[in-house]
Image (cartoon, rainbow, N blue to C red; front, side):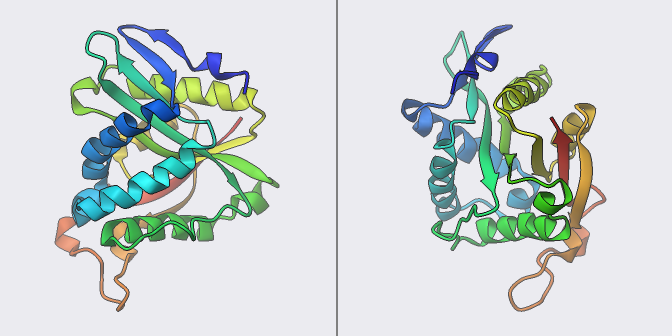
Amino acid sequence: MGNYSIVEGPWDRYTFRKVRPQDWDKVIKHIQTFFLRDEPTSKLLGYTDEYGEEFAVLAKKLFLDDLSFWVEDNETGEVAAVRVTFRHRKDTSFDGISMNSRTLKHLYKLVDICHQRCDLFEKYNLEEYADFFVASCAPKYRKRGITTEMYRRSLEFLKAEGFKLAKSVFTSPYTRAAARNLGFVEDSRVDFSELKEDDGTLLFDPKDLNGEHYGAMLVKLL
């Protein structure tokens, strides 16, 4: 994969780096510490060790596509931000990934409903697309332009790699706004008020929800 130089390199006081096997543990630790506790669905349902461990297994599977990167603070060596991306094909399956934790199970259901409401392969005549799975920035590094720069570099890289479309299901109003500013458009959405437990009861108490509690599948043609 010869286009990673588009992503890797210095920016301000940070360095963008490809996620390599020696980085997996610290990148996953960042995801468990920040993303899995801040992402709106996870925040409402709660973090558990089981959820964190299952998500770690899933992340390692996605890292194998060599489309993910992380941002290092040059002064401290800390993981400031993470961008996990994978190659989504028609035959992509997560059947071998354990989803016993309540939070991961319902997060996956939300994403699956978005996919059911808009078949991207059929609508855009695709065999594959780039799936932005996780965008995470540690709280102390937010509002510095890092997330926008992650998207900018990633989109340029993916276009050079031959992808025709990038997609993500956004549950955070902040990442939705960042994506829309970069030209992403909405193809489907799921309100949190629609989500249900296995027995048909509502997943969330309506009083805990507001107008920003929804998942939106946004896409950008490359």
